Length: 166
Image 1 (tube, rainbow, N blue to C red):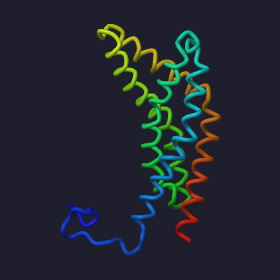
Image 2: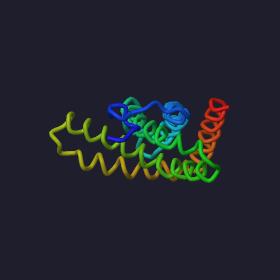
Image 3: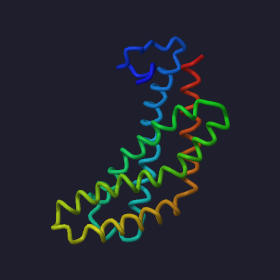
């Protein structure tokens, strides 16, 4: 355990306040990623071919399962976005690349759980394969909108983080 771990006997408060800034930016980044990216996931899910064949409630549930992955990604990248412009650019690129992957991964976990509970496990592989295929198609179809959402996320995280430090 290092001095940054509050359970360490050598722990000391951070006199610079950088730790508190990173914690607050992680919270804001998680909320913003969920709020900004989840409607895009819902849009991609609803407009995917074959989604109209399924029940709309199931489609919205699968889209809702992507929220934790998006929030974790936003929380992890927000402190990096407060750094230099190069750091912010790299964080934005990582969010743009990682958002579809995080959304699909979270949805896959949920689909696997739902499919295994609802059936005897016979259609789990097929459901996962279809989720991956449709998720990738949706991510490719809405990639330009994803870029706009990532830029908005980056600007808002940097502006709110800068206001807190000044």
